[in-house]
Length: 291
Image (cartoon, rainbow, N blue to C red):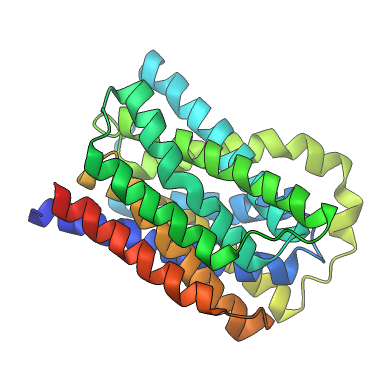
């Protein structure tokens, strides 16, 4: 693996680990602030942070019609639809289930890369994905208890599908645009998309006691760390690694999410977690070695 690709792999691993912790934070605060309003607040914080970073770095804006439209789609699909369904699914189920089900993203990324980027999967790709999916099943198990949890799992699956599409679209514009610009435009599009809903449900936010450290620290983490920082790092990693298996590094998310869910929310860890974690790391090793 070249130096450039190694940095890309580290970026993707860091972003996925941050998102693993995000599920625990969302689960702890989403009972106070509903999913859509919570996403709206985190993007509000993220926009401010991104603007400051872009100003300090002196990012030069670029725009053309075709890629500009792709940026808008990235914002709608990845930043708006994917994150709202992700947080709704976590609210309906658990932090662990949220982290694990959305780990189906790599499989969807391979399929979208095949369709949109004409990157044909190899036997190594398929072997790696099979190992990864078996690892996910080992961690989460096959039992969904209750209609609410099943609905949550379906929302999380939709989140994984839309996130995979967004990640492949990012690769289409990565050569033309700075990762900060891609992240900022997507964040603004998502925030504007969710503003009408938030405006008509403003009373839900008016009832929240934002003076509580737990509330404002959670929003700060979701906006500054898991949105502004992690999105930029993820998009940069996609550009540096430039592989249809970039999504495999997303599998650090269920491992971190499950461990933190156990530590902070009392969600149990099983033997399946240890087995599944081993299979996920094995899948990444197979993907790298096969190439």
